[in-house]
Amino acid sequence: MSEYIFKLPDLGEGTVESEIGEWYIKVGDQVVEEDVVATMMTDKAAVELSSPVSGKVVKLAGEPGDIVAVGAPLVIFETGTAAPEKLAKASTPGTGNGGNGADSEPTAETVPVEPPVEAADSLMRSRVVTSPAIRRMAKEAGVDLALVAGSGPGGRISRKDFDQFLERQALAGAAIPARPAAATTSEVKVIGLRRIIAERMSAANREIPHFSYVEELDITELEALRRHLNSKKSDDAERLTLLPFLGLALVRALREFPQCNTTYDKERNVLLRHGAVHLGVATQTPDGLKVPVVRHAEARSIDDLASEIRRVSNAARDSSAKKDELSGSTITITSLGKLGGIASTPIINLPEVAIIGVNRAVERPVVINGQIAVRLMMNLSSSFDHRFVDGYDGAAMIQSIKDMLEHPATIFLPG
View 1 (cartoon, one colour):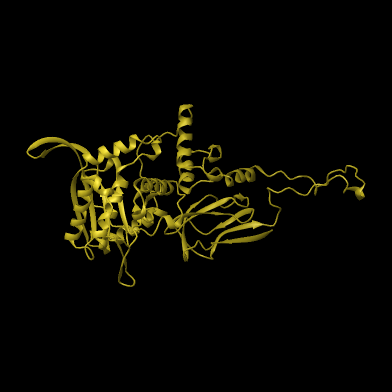
View 2 (cartoon, rainbow, N blue to C red; view 1 turned 180 degrees about the horizontal axis):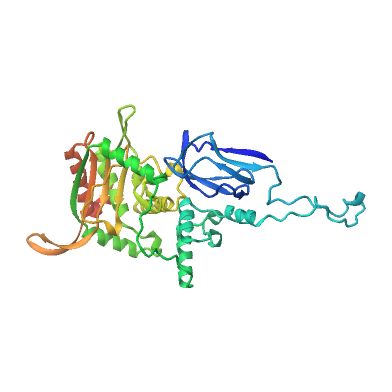
């Protein structure tokens, strides 16, 4: 027997340490090479790590939430025996008994070794390709992911695949875990993305003097245009929401108010005004709030912008987003969808200086030219870093966006 020490590898982007997000193994488990053993959390993403060897787990670096330095021991394996998934070399005709071609009796060295049940189960787990969030949901729901058909590259299981599997199980009358009969109090450790969100929100609220501004919009004409454009689309997946219209209007407004398309380098005490608009899209995911980024929103058409918003948002939700797709935004938009409420006070996404929030659209009676009319009304809730964006400029930018959204043809004018 011998020991193999699996050290935490460099996860890229200058990472010097990483947080243990979730273990998929425990001490005593028999692990097969390439089994997923853990999810490690960086500031940008959750990274699944696979075992480099086959063996028995004898020690783990810590519990979820603990920090491990790059190069430090993560898992210690007991090895020294043949990997259970491999077969011992069998004799072939013409090589046994002096090469006379006669069949030989199998010996202990030539009998194929069947992998133990534990190793077979582990090998099956290693073939499941999905995100840490879906693994966790499957664990909570008691679902064997080996039974779920993945539609993504390499059979990757997406959130849609998992949800459809649950729906089929429900229709088939499969048992659903019962809720506890009585409410209980339990401890939930703040780790992973939730810890990062908590730290960033606290830092943003502590360091930034937020100036919030709410403006009411009449989006009756915008909604008519949106419905008209969608009526021309045969694929429901390509239908437009309000966000790409807001994105285009924001891009045009930033030409006049470039101080809002800015990030603050605290270490150098420098403001970086960006020519390109890298649009952050705050997205709720099973792991918490993520902000995937649409690169060069200023160079995109309405359909291209809508498509890219969908793509990066879906990638954030199923944890397939790459690291560079979750960083580098210069200004962020956020929406609570159907839960949008009347107004909100969005917290700025550090190191940016502005964020624009969409609230729920509702029909209301309003007075137009002395007459009462029913119009589709919606509020925009925005926040600005008052150190670098004056209140007047922030309000003026929102007024510019309001004017374009209330007269949507102006969004598409050249210039």
